[in-house]
Length: 192
Length: 102
Figure 1 (cartoon, chains in turn cyan, yellow):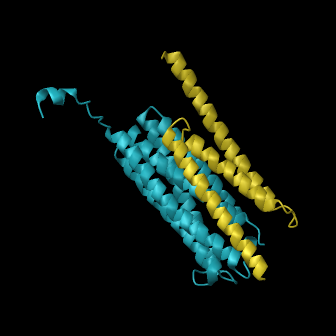
Figure 2: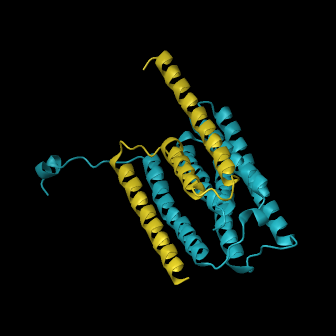
Figure 3: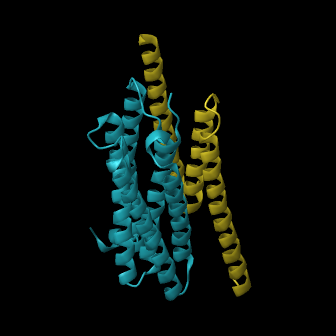
């Protein structure tokens, strides 16, 4: 290629690492959403096809689930505040609050599992489709929350730079979003 | 942008954030109330799904900032809606089939 021809070419667009991080996270979230969608579709089909399905209120603790939902909503709020904070110290404070709420959610989930496991009429992974689908959906989501808390701690330890925080915030809001249908379908949706 | 304009913009964003989370909390309370309503209520499942859709839309718009001015975001939402509608149609057909078999 002659120097004249090279000069005629448009300059390539160079995206900064921040935009690449956001695009990468959106791509990951899209694939992850398919994982959740697969589990939800499996749950829906199994529930519709089942001859009998237990009443959620007979086994699950609605009060605890409501508290977990409010905890996640509050964590989404603290995450938003962390991304908007201009001072590093404030950012770290909001991040710590988000991680604490995430840990509280996980603690509540473990308490719920323990209660279900040891109840008089226990709900376990092996106790039919109901138990299997319940633990698959909530466990998959719980793993996401645990991974999110690890990410939050890692970001905080590295100084909570605003651009990195924006990428982690996308993930955290997605985890919050994924809980909403779990709460509605597993805890609230009445039996047929 | 002047410092005053920037401050006003930040205040407006904070207000919108608080309003979003108050709305999400109110919708969750509404969901629990609807779920606890009389068992004979036929529109309960529809109401629960409707409230869920509003909550998801709020999180998408205000937390994940799926800005509809971006063409890619609009496409993403369109694909999600088509997939959701497809899944719902499959579930309804399955339920109709089961009802006919029984």
